[in-house]
Length: 376
Image 1 (cartoon, rainbow, N blue to C red):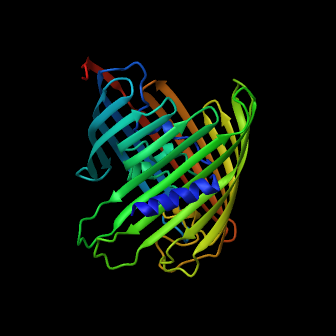
Image 2: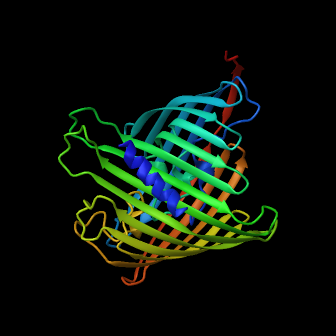
Image 3: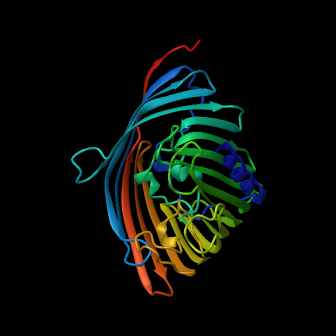
């Protein structure tokens, strides 16, 4: 299956493929790589307490509520200045459940290959850190599937940020009756203007591809490979240190490709246009956008943007026209204690259908120094 990874990543780099998404990276579990922490051993706790209520009444996704908490205690060791080992356990508890919903071991090795290039193997810096737009990658994955495992390269320089990864979701042995599953992705942003300019122009690009199959599996269904590509342009203007920090606009062009033709739908490709405007203020972000899609599917995207229903078998609409807004509020009480609230609206123009969601998060991420242990 490695040939599929190579093909999909090459497609993404050929398109040179933004981010129409309220920044939620501060609440994610993966810690930044510390400088000057050589041979240090830490105990780290990552706790996210959440409520997310989706009031959806349309034909594409049903409303539901998520309430609970996640906890990830771990040991973090810096073996010198360029390698870090992190090992622990990830716990998910949804309110109303008598047992933990998930108990997952976590392990990652993070090495800085150069000053600009990092390699992570095991548990990835994933989810909202990929900076993908909501139509192709659902931000609710941070609750339902917060741990990605595989390998990842992250490049960060003055002009270019790039994140390339493979999330191996299901491994198979010879003769298994279940399919092999993985997701490959590339997310980039190239900054055209210089950092010192108040007016910024950048070119974002994204690719998410999913694969279902496996040559050594006895899985009865056909192999399936789907890909979403995104490109666009982002413009922003830095206002200053007042209540309004900056304003920006962006336009994204997204495409869908069925590489194997086995989805069961009559179409094998589609596209969408997604212009958005954004205002970043002292306590968060207000964003508004318009989603115009034709035969669009994204297996990892939010279901409310798709051309097919996730709960009505066979339901399909060729064109989607959707108005969206998001308003976020964040407050940091201490460096390790953060609160956020979010309100989102979705208006389906042809159906005259108004859906909305809201949620709150309280995040606690303390880091305790234990000892210095020399690594030979």
